[in-house]
Image 1 (cartoon, one colour):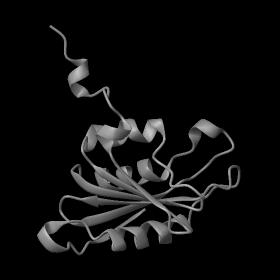
Image 2 (cartoon, one colour):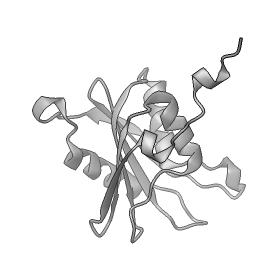
Image 3 (cartoon, one colour):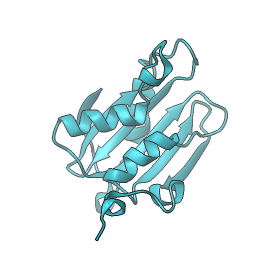
Length: 145
C-alpha cells in the first residue's frame, strides 16, 4: 500500500492513465497463491493523493483482504476519507467489478465514486458505486425514532 501525488487533468478530472498505471504496478505485488487472481487498485483521494492496494490471500480464506479495501485502509490510515476515482486492474478476460464486501466499504466513503476496471488485454468497464450497489445499506439506515 502506498500513496503518491496525482496529476489532475482538465477541470480537476482524474488522470485515469496514471491511476491505471498505479493499479497495474501494485497488482504485481498481490499475494494470491490460492486463487491465482491478482488484483491491483488505485484510489484517488479528494486531495490528489493516490492510494494503492493489492489483494492478500490467506489459507484461512476469510482472513484475506481485497485490493480495493486495502487501498481504502491505506487512505484512511493517512487521514483521507473522500475519494474521487477508483481503478481496478486484473489479469481476467473480462473487467471485474468490486466484490460485494468491497462495494459496501466503498459506498461508505463515496456513494457516487466512478470505478474503472481494466484487464491486462486492455478491456475496460466503468460504473458508479450507486450503479454497483443500488439501495445500499448506509449510515442513514442505522437511524431510528
